[in-house]
Image (cartoon, rainbow, N blue to C red; front, side, top):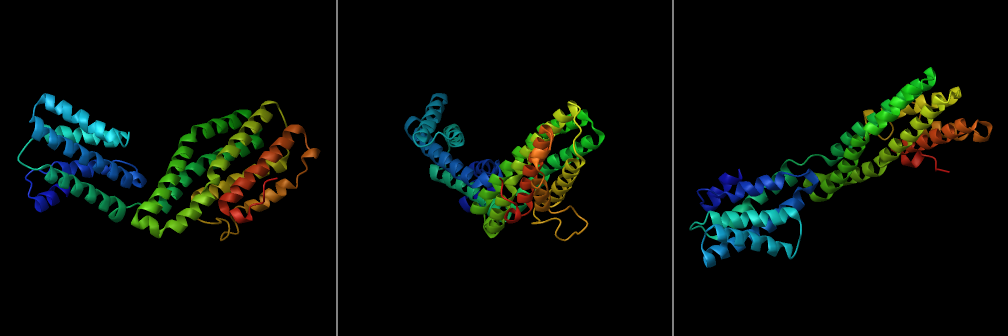
Amino acid sequence: MAWVVAQYLLGQPAPIFAPIAAVVCLTDAPGARGRRAVRVLAGVCVGVAVGELAVRVLASGWLQIGVAVAAGMLVVALGSINSLALLQAGIAALLVVALASPQTGWTRLLSAVIGGALALLVSQVLATPSPARVITGAARDALRVPADALGEVGAALRERSASRAARAVEALRAGQGALASFLDASDTAAALATSTLRGRRERGRVDELRTRLAAVEYVHASSVLLARTVAEALGDGADVPGHLARGVDELAAAVRAVAADPAAPDPSADDPAGPRPTHEIADELAAVRPGGLADRDAQLATQLHLLALDVAALVDPSSAPART
């Protein structure tokens, strides 16, 4: 499209800068394409200007190409050390000198502007992903890891299997990639909400989701601590009280329900047969007196309570009991 539009508007037989700018502007995460386009165009502008000056003053040749590339990158470096802007300045200067023709530098520059403008039209207006879907999709993948791991921990407690609890710990460690992808997706959603047309319409929803789903990271960390403690306790032959094992199962069900639909404020609200509200689980676990338990059991009860608070924050931060 950039090639055809530049041909039509500028009368260029081969508007090479238009498709180059369009492709480069789109090769980034959706939330970063606007900034990338600005950097691309800034680098191209400088490179074209320096290359055109080099052609007029030094003519063309291998030495002139080297001088133009170095000068273009140096000029950009005076204001920015961003690698993309530096690269585009060098490439633009190289192409202007190497493909010296009767075309003017302004024509080449306008060709790049057309390509960048079309890329921005596509990425920021016509084909912008929903930022709400970006963050909820990543949250779904990130929450499946602790949901499955907590299910394994509950099974390990019922079977008194230290090896099964250890596998849950390893699964949580392997799930760090999904958690990192969620954190990146949260940042991308925030960028889309401020820099795109569709994102601005969803901005309120995105802000609410980012606030609530921030607890995904805490749920993952609390699950790791709980799984490690259970693995150590079972490895030492400890007999964990049944109500604590039931608490793990309930929390696993609650996390699984949130993972099924992270956008829902309370997955159990419309399903009486679904998992018990996590703030009730947290209240019940908080009522357990650690002083009346063995040291390892008291540690498990405390960690379960904290995990329940983190899960409750995922469902409804306003109903989650305060940490004490």
